[in-house]
Image (cartoon, rainbow, N blue to C red; front, side, top):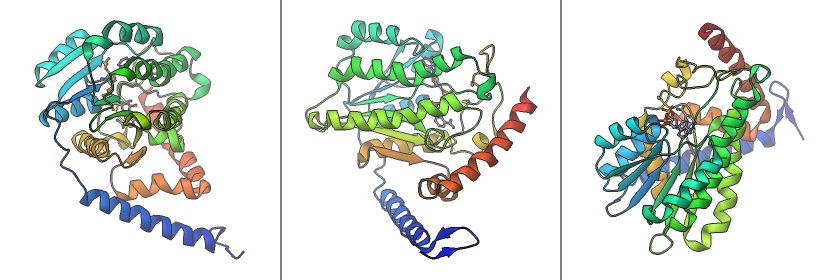
Length: 312
Ligand SMILES: NC(=O)c1ccc[n+]([C@@H]2O[C@H](COP(=O)([O-])OP(=O)(O)OC[C@H]3O[C@@H](n4cnc5c(N)ncnc54)[C@H](OP(=O)(O)O)[C@@H]3O)[C@@H](O)[C@H]2O)c1
């Protein structure tokens, strides 16, 4: 096999890259053409965890504007009340995802009264900003509970609520590109987001015959307070500062619209949403060429570390 010495990859790799990029661009274009103006959700019920801020709040607002009844969850009763005041047909429930046993009991108590669901979105989440070596085990446990074990408990507890007749229903996890490509000073967060891919895709095979579509949407940087709300290594406070990457990220409204379009389209079990074509390519290339992923990882870590140093 002949190799291009400068980049040390083969002509075959290059041809594959071109084919993949062409398919990628065409798929995106066809998805854009198929843009479904978010569909009609009148008479439908959508459940969004972490609906009190950022992406979850925007999703709840957009689904409601499209006619849905929305059920949102969060840790703070007052925040839930305030958000629900601004959204039509909104119900709020206090549900802390840090304790999976608590989530299981919550489902036993509330599943019946919640009734049938058309869409269930596992959006609640919290990230971190610290090197692994300075992160306490308890923070890892917290992230594991919120992003994984409680997602498992809530999915199991509400599975019988998902509509199976007619158009069926959708269960959607909110993942992160960090879970696919890795991202320094968020090691535990990235690994938990990565676990969502296996979870929602495996589930997809189990629930397909019930007309339930299970999917994961991996997000790139989105303009929310996620960095400000991030945990520091010992959990004593939140990071309290936003990142330049988040500032340049996709506006939250556009993120919500594109997520809803993907939920309506149901044409894949894995969707990526990033800000701009260049970012899509940057995120996608490591799948084809791991060495590009390695370069990105080391390069990003330097930037992340200088941000961390400034914040301290
Ligand atoms: N923004 C990004 O760049 C980005 C990129 C990739 C993935 N994501 C993911 O997108 C999701 C939404 O994040 P966001 O950007 O909208 O951040 P955000 O503004 O900080 O919102 C996080 C939401 O999760 C809820 N939450 C946090 N910890 C919780 C817990 N222990 N139990 C229950 N609810 C909890 C919060 O509710 P309360 O504080 O009211 O409890 C809030 O509603 C997260 O899963 C995040 O990992 C975000």
